[in-house]
Image 1 (cartoon, rainbow, N blue to C red):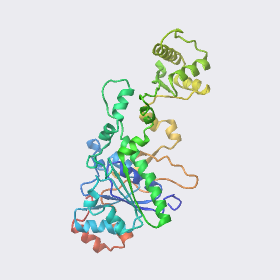
Image 2 (tube, one colour):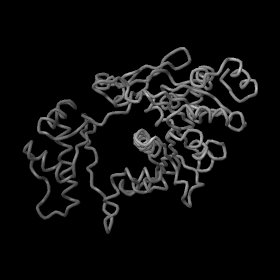
Image 3 (tube, rainbow, N blue to C red):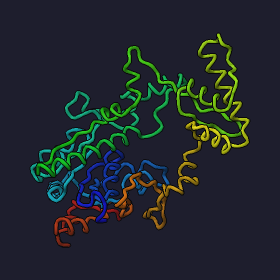
Image 4 (cartoon, rainbow, N blue to C red):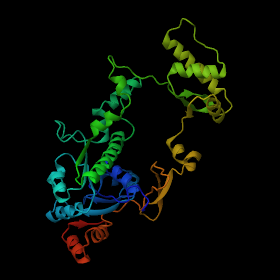
Length: 389
């Protein structure tokens, strides 16, 4: 893919689960040669799935499209030596071990920098390697608790059962920041000839990206008001952008609605009565499409509340070519959401399906290191290189 923006980059990806692998997937689809180094036990996302989907799960596929895969036992000295041989041929090294683990495996920053002074290393971890919380485990559910997202969501929602955030937001937010930091460090290395280490703490990434922090840091804190979706009866639910006062004023003016609230009513009563009046008006429209068209014609930003499945597979998703069919490695295909980058003079796509464990052992070692088949076979017999049967 010579026109791809990152076609001249080779990335060695030691990461697993989501934050690191998704970073590497972005780079792979931007054209980089990404070599995933998978442990003998396999990436956890292979089993974070319903039993029928384990091994080559949808989550693993989604996070690892476009990569090549070598399976190396880093517990063996020959495995660590092989990893450093690959480091010497790569521009970027990516890891998301708990702080100190990469050093113990022989692939920490000092070893990487000594092997390849031009290489950039990106380390994604929970709380920062120099912090008092460095040893804490970090997965999205615990990170959502530690960063206040669960409590804030609960408070903003008005109470009720305490629930976790319904996605892996901490992982994916960290992945996007890791990608930005990585590309910036690569640019710096191109100018100086010397690589550097970039550390992304998930704790920092989540809070640096959460748009409610300015409101929470007021004294006293304030909750930013957002009207709940309107129940439009037979027309489903519709979300309208803006604070409640603005939404009422805009719709009432556009459609000449009478204010149902008494002049001397308190603010909560006015808000409730106006919200109910808007719901009655919305429910009276002939269809959901007619309702949305009317609001759009009045320049009121809105959207019907649809299911995730409809968003992924509906008419507009098809117009956007949102889903691509990828080899499921089981004799069929599975749909995966494409990345959002649309370049005017470059194609962004996955060049290969998500790899099997150890699928490219021989290919990578022959191509990248120039090894012959006998040397590769010897490492396989020694248990340094492994592959799925």
